[in-house]
Amino acid sequence: MKFPKEYLEEIKQRVKVSDIVGATVQLKRRGREFVGLSPFSKEKTPSFTINDEKGFYHCFSSGEHGNIFDFLVKVEKLNFGDAVRKLAAKAGMPVFKFTKENIEVENKRKKYDEILTIALQHYQKNFFDNEIVKKYAFDRGLTQEILSTFKIGYSGDYGLNVSLFSNFNQKELIESGIFFHDEKNNKLVDRFKNRLMFPIFDYNNKVIGFGGRALGQNYLAKYINSPETEFFKKGFNLYNLNNAKTENKQSSIVFVVEGYMDAISLYQAGFKNVVATLGTAMTESHLNLVWRYFNDPLVCFDGDRSGQNAAQKISEKLIAYMKPNYSLSFLILPNGFDPDSFIRKNGRNNFEILLDQKIDIGNFIFENNLQNLQSTQPEERAGFEKRLMDTCLLIQDSTVKKHYISFFKNRIFEQFSNKKNKNIKPLNKTKELTRKITRYSSFELKEFSLMYLFLNNFLILRNQFDKLSLINFHNKNLEELRKVLVNILEKIETFKDFNLLKHLEENNFSQIIKDINEFSSIKGISENLNDEKFDNFLNDLIEQVNNLKLQSKLNDAEESLSKNMNEAHYNELLSLKDQIVASKKV
Image: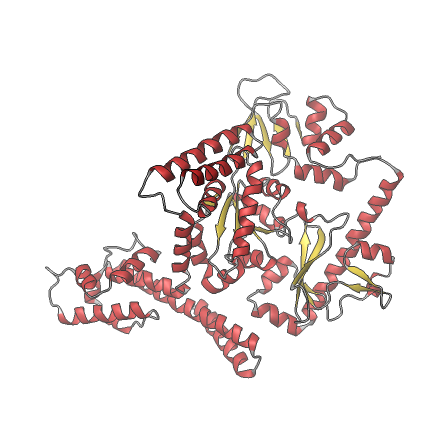
């Protein structure tokens, strides 16, 4: 009998080719691949390559090519069955035993796939047949393209009817996770009734489960997932990995978020390298899964206390599995935001600003422990150091462990030997920056760039006085500054001995100028321009500000409509959408 395809695929998913080959061949990283001397022929120049993403090795000198199973068969001279058993043990999987039950498992798998495929098709059909649910999705900012990409559906008011699955028995339908048995009424019921449906795909684009968001108010849980089944393990799968894995040519980073809408919002904003856990804490298996495609996973959790606590627990657990050339970082959003709400309110540009505040796992653990330090008394410091050293003892890779011990000892020395820095807590710095960023809307941040352009090209502005007069800034401080600039241009005839910056600081504009310099996205590239380049920058920035203002109004209109569905709000929404479409055609 043959090993089931799914069993072999699961092993290949959990175990990297480089990990197996590296036990026999000395490997060096070259870009996204590894190279080494061929184990199949004698050579002085490495021609043997391994690609973990594609799951194969290739030897240019001998022509040998294969996967992890082939390598053990050819190099260690194992038979195929022994190779599978050895790799299954390394993957932490049970040994596969060929019994008469295996055929039943294979048949169950096929029926499971068929049931979920039928469910997916009908959930999608229900969605496109229901105008109210479609409107809800569009009001949440989901585009038609995103709905198609993620195959989002709707379960229906009462869920799917069992009659759609006439070829399957009750036991098979319950084991699929789609239905449960209502003992009171002695019938099968779709567990996802009246929910927006998010199909979950494995890395091969096969549907393996569902998540559902309640659309009514009388539900105990806003989100529910398919239960764990024989073929759906939440600890070994990630939402959107099937799409995200192809993005590793563009970036080594992958965002790891908690919710479906977090992943979808980031994806729609252009961050397609995003995956979500399935209602469970991030595990070692999750980490190895994303490391297969990306070297730098970035855990991006909610800014509330529970999100911070979850991130802290993950860091303390997963540091045990850190290994050479792979990293893990963290980004905590401002309080009150998750990735979905932050992107929708503040836009892609502001999210990119936040990315500068990501913290690698070592510094993240150090700073979280530092936050809990009550005093700098010797016994407190000793306890602080012991906690960090105990954390290092968990690390499995001896080389990584050695370097983390050295890293933490250096950080401890820096923290307590420099009086100026001993009370600095970097997480507080991060919180302060994110607080300042979210204080401003996306178009206000663009307005900072516009004012930066004016302040750094004031002599040109003197000759184009009308352009400054026609602009009205939404930000009150910028508008006050604009009025002062207009007044200066009207009254001062020569700028030979005039110090503009000093004049503005004397008139209490120091803080807004500091913000302008901090938040301008054109800093360093828009200074001392000629007339033509100044006009190009100016026109482009004005267009961007206007478009962002329209988008902000659109978001407000969508929120108003969701709270009070009346004709006035609906017409306002249509008008704003028409304006946005018209602006894009210009």
